[in-house]
Image (cartoon, rainbow, N blue to C red; front, side, top):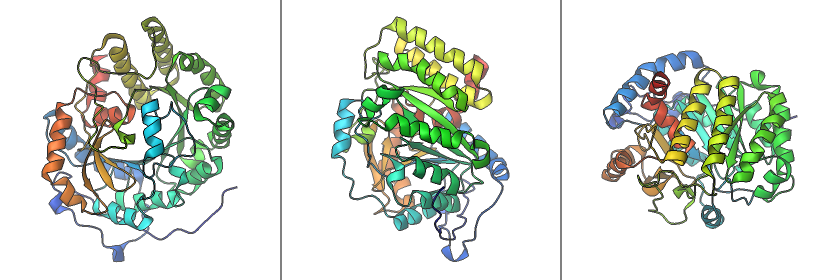
Length: 410
């Protein structure tokens, strides 16, 4: 049973007609806030012209305002794992990352008020459920950003808090809940350096899987493949999860991420000579067999957009790891349709470039977005060879229209 608590009454923000013209956006008036229960279906239909406008702008390499938000709410994490942080380099940086300056609830409220509406809001970390206000943040996001859906990535180390989030966030907004795992039993526990890690993940899956429809929650297990043993555990984990009707997807662990770099102004972007650098060493034959197995599961178990998205990622990672070919390769929408906010209010360039274009604790969003520094980094994004990290690839595939074009090409 979850613990109930009261939440403030919060309401709508201004919906921008043209997300590129931030001078026209007026912060919402808190005196006029009312509870928002508008239909998400109508909200989705109302966003269609803006979405199509953004696709056209991206196809022409134009600048576009943000439509989606990845909010890293804290870098704090209660596990000491290396595989979820992707490499020893990142793992070491994660332990040194300053954690004492996370934005307060009120600061986040003020920031959300300045932003245009978002198609989705993704809460991640660190471990987002470590924040005491993690449920309240979802209500603030609904009030001011009016998302079509929420996404939360969690290590499920505290099942009761994950369940509480699913129950108490604004329930009319669907939730995409992604649980990070590395394998079954000891494999997962060893990578997280916690002997209860697998048990807690499964407790979360068991508690929520039968309630997905009731809670408007889509549960996915995201398995990080960092070595050959991870490949072996894919089938084992797939069989464990199958009775619970939860999605099981993979992500290949890359060697470094600027998100967790201690130093600012670090770039780990791939080069044309080496488009993807994994943590572990793999034989091409085992990768080819593994990708074939994953593809068979995607084709037999998924339908519609969910199948398109997973197939898109798989096709891209296969081409990069087996042939070093950038296909597909959508124009990146970082620092345009996709906005990232760090725990202290920094706006970084992207997951592989920690150059910060401004800080929302000290500057207004309008000031940062219209700055020469943001425009300079946006030009860097457009010249990048292109990464293949899922949280960057998916918005780029969507907001350039390449996800649909890829299906038509296939």
